[in-house]
Length: 205
Image (cartoon, rainbow, N blue to C red; front, side):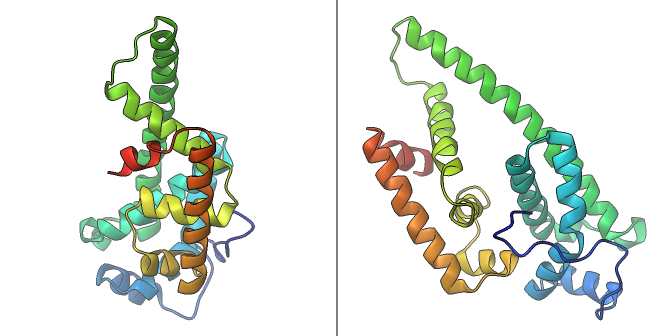
């Protein structure tokens, strides 16, 4: 995980004070402390699979976050009788990696199409404009300091509240709020400087 974030502390075989059955039961019951514990226990495993498959640390960070967000929201779908929580997380990871590879190919194709459209002199609004807006936002997000980028991606794409981001990252709520405020300010300035002031608003309207 990024150096600025407290990384997952344990692999799936590490013994902890909390019994794994209790951890799984708490996770399924919606205990946010158990979400943090599950993330720190198996985050390294998930991140390693994503990084090996995607070959990109930033994309692997995003997939790792998506996996745990998806697992948390879909926890009612986990059945302990069918396998372990770690195995379930690995299955989600593989699906998210496949989605990321598909999205990567789609973005490349759409950007190529956008270049052809511009070269042809067509300027009419289309679904392609929305995709290009997303590409612009991703580019600007990638230039932010890692903590700010992580908080904004969790808020924008994970649709998490700031308290939920604090639980997932292990950062104090005040730190999360500070990173969000500074990141949004940097994005606003970047879009104003680039003459794209409406892009962020269009993307998230």
